Image (cartoon, rainbow, N blue to C red; front, side, top):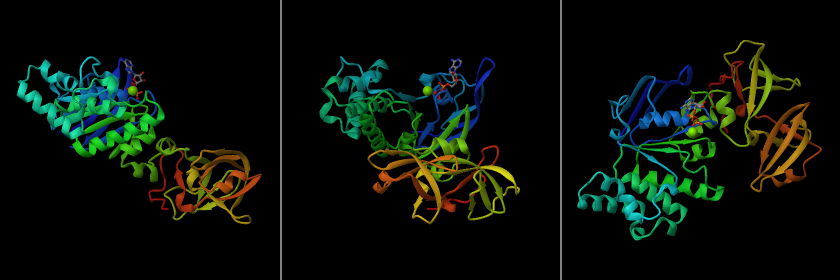
Length: 358
Ligand code: ADP
Ligand code: MG
């Protein structure tokens, strides 16, 4: 397995620059997820690592060796596709050994490689089966096994679960995480789904508009989003954003509500800011406490309830697991705990460096 070092990498198609100065060091054995909305450049970056796209500028290194001009087949990198990329007419052993047979590897070597991968992945009892006789999870394991026998330096995944239904996607996500726990293979996984990113990643790389917005452990991005893009992208239902003015360690919302922050920020008094608070952090208070808000809509999700509220015309959401909220209305009382408040400056960059604590 290998480390992957991306230094100042750019990608342009003609005059259109789709990736800007990407800097990323992926450690040996790490599971890194590239996440962002469609069109932000995730697949392009992944394909550049695989060698399927040229590098316009910058350096791409695998295990310290510059690979900018190295042919894809000489990079020892495996792309893992969806389960249906298996050959239907070949059994599991045939699918797993196919690439080594193409390379004319010795028979004993092929047998040993297939047996090794099968035992790591719990596929020993299934080697004679055709793909159609396997569950979705087993097919995914065969697809991984096929990659493992090649002993690649890294595994690359491009939205491997996006065509599956929600239930199967959850199962496969857990399978992939278990496999990574066993194999400890350097992996780069592309998805537009923030839950997939949160649950799978050692580190998330959040991208938008061809620019890396933040790199960090999943809960680092959730607790301390570096800017409004990350704040809004990570978490569901998404973070509430309210326009406000900063002065003397407090923020004043457009309806004149004042929220005192735990500490002063490096902002000028009078600075226009955006206050962010996650729906799960808004507190439903007893009558007489907090601020009175109007209930516009009640959405039960089963696990909890999403209340759509407005405070003197400012719309925001609350998420609660308290079923009493089902009958909330026409007004509720809410509090914005100051430690849970994120403040973003007029350019959308995080202004409070201190961790908002639970
Ligand atoms: P993602 O995988 O995040 O959805 P992509 O990496 O596929 O995004 O695309 C990033 C941007 O690059 C998009 O704006 C897309 O239109 C553009 N792009 C991708 N491939 C090409 C190409 N071959 N020629 C021109 N533009 C491209
Ligand atoms: Mg893509």
